[in-house]
Image (tube, rainbow, N blue to C red; front, side, top):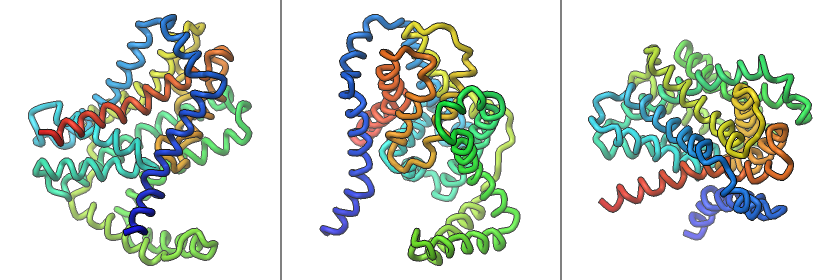
Length: 331
């Protein structure tokens, strides 16, 4: 029991505590939170509301993607929104957002959706979302990399590495579908190398688990939906997420900057944060924002703006998801 509690603390509670600790650090540093409170009444209210509205719309387009893939689940759009917010909450509190899809599968199960169907639908959504994310990330690197590369040492390498990680899930699904055995042999080879350099202990067990999960997915009719509307939803979800920083900058009265620069900056923050295992990529997300957005904000405003940005883009999903989950459990 003690070992189980300790493992739970290390894997679930400690990462969240570290994430919140990093937020508290940025709030305390240079009295940033007090500065934000002082500035808050002076912000352009309309733009601040547009920033909040953008994140809500981003969630809404996410639930529209689920509705498109699972049209017979419910007649109520709010039921689809619940699925999205379960993913937002559990993704926000788990390393690498690993709890997001698992929690959504459990919720769909409770609504009489078969496990195989739920996993297939959510995997399709992930696949399509990743395609849209990779497309936006690739365009940002192609056209905006030059404007940001001097701000962080090794910036180009780090963003390309982030893009490679984003692409890996897509490539793996396609290759597994085309030639399962060859892909698993390649994975097992890399896992054996990881064992030799003491990164993992049991490559055979990991390889078998991965193969079983992928086989289960393929046997439950995984297929990519080529309906244009669902890709439009995916693009809008990603763009609206990026619009938050633009509207926050406008609320602070920052001079005009092309909105494409803000989309690229947020894309780069995501790419630089992608390998951070802490919930919400805590630390990397904040640090990347401070470095990449410093030309858009004054020195006095940049840290308060980052705190406000993180609250809307990250903590708001956790809070709304929490109240939806609590509301469901009370019924």
